Image (tube, rainbow, N blue to C red; front, side, top):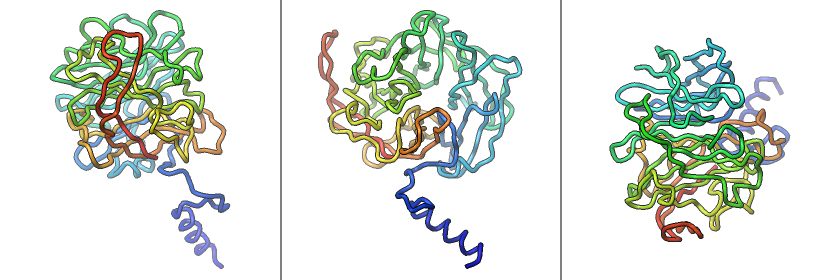
Length: 351
């Protein structure tokens, strides 16, 4: 049997979802990209991703989410000022420009920065620090527009010490200028999001609008260094004020995770991956006004570790998956102002 035939045979076996050793199905949706924190948008027929790479930021472009990992990484920004660790860039469009938001710094110095360009993979401006209200440690920020108002959402500290990471909102007068106060909308206070902590974590917030027009912020809970990492949902009540914390209702458990004990009732744990988190809804132009309708499944990207592999940051891969809206779902709470239940759309995630 010649080597060319062996190569073709091995490729066919792998494509059929079997490992070379015949150990069982390969992780569904796993790409070849060993990385974290995917951010992906679709512009026309092109999928555009951004990632932290080589001490800076790189963009990839491809005709599908599956093809992104093999696309060339085009460096669009480098840390020439030695700001420090560059984390979790997010790409969006606004007013005909591309904006990439990212966190940079060392330890408690992490703050949010932005660069922009008229093209997705070249011509970006120098970085500009966002003057977020409070001036505290901030990561995982992103811009979205809801009901005609620009908002910035991020994960940050209440003070100057690393006790817990909360989700905050601020109004934006333009894509680079926060205005007014910061508003807390979530803290990691539920038992299922405090399995792993010190600090306890709410991070990687991503906005999306459901078929009823209600705003959701889907975020990652529990420490990213653990396979307890998972996705949960914040749903703004119909007609609610995004700046009022008690107008937000939290899912009663993880909606996408690998541990049954922390899953919301009616949601099942993953089969192929551990600790799925820090996801990206792949929206047209990155705009929540293009959020999908009820019914079909739509593209999702997230990072996770293949089951059977030691859980570590170094073993995270980008995965392609899907999501769909799940109607008539009640979120419950107690001992807080306002109604104790809210019923509406939730989200189902698929590997």
